[in-house]
Length: 287
Image (cartoon, rainbow, N blue to C red):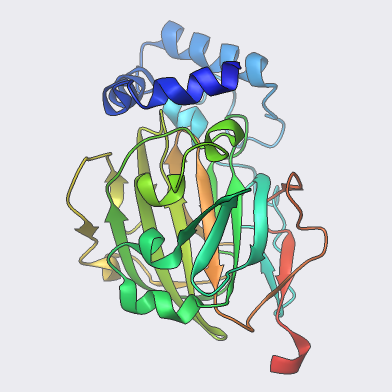
């Protein structure tokens, strides 16, 4: 009942205004205020801080700085097997499955098309017909930096404006086409096994999405933004390299073409992941 009410309220609440307010609060630099926000958040969500690089809370200038915290070197070992794809985030598997023609499963009885997810990249969408995808949810307590699941070259990046529905399980199960409706950042890669797409999906309270190529991208209601000069930062990435971060939490979706990846058997809904863990393998018959 409460979940239904929460989802219904999201249709009428001023989600962009709420998100803008959270953005400002998360960047307060008054020491007592930001320390209070950080320590209460850590207690409320039982955040793991043993592997955080800076001292908590004194090492952070604001709550947002803590939210996008760096970890100690070696805290997330990257699987070095050349034939594996690794988790780009710490999070929980929502679903990992095949793409049925161009249809991606969102939840039971709800799906959406690859073309709708990629928005302006309709020609690119054909590469993922009958491919595979994984959707991973980042809870508030998770580490919120996103890392490369494979080695490759970033060839294009586009910010697609949209709504800001929550991406928690209750909302995903009730809002038709949520991931194609919400704002998102679409990153296109070329890899040794073909093209690949990684999508950062924005959500309620996600104040912005940042990458080394784009800087901070603030939520907006209209106008696709093509990141024009991605060459300002190295575009060749190795598996495990930093791709960006959510300023507040959300979801990532990884798309791969047909025949390029077999998901591991334990990549099931509800499975918890850490950056660098193997989640899929290059099929033996393509080697």
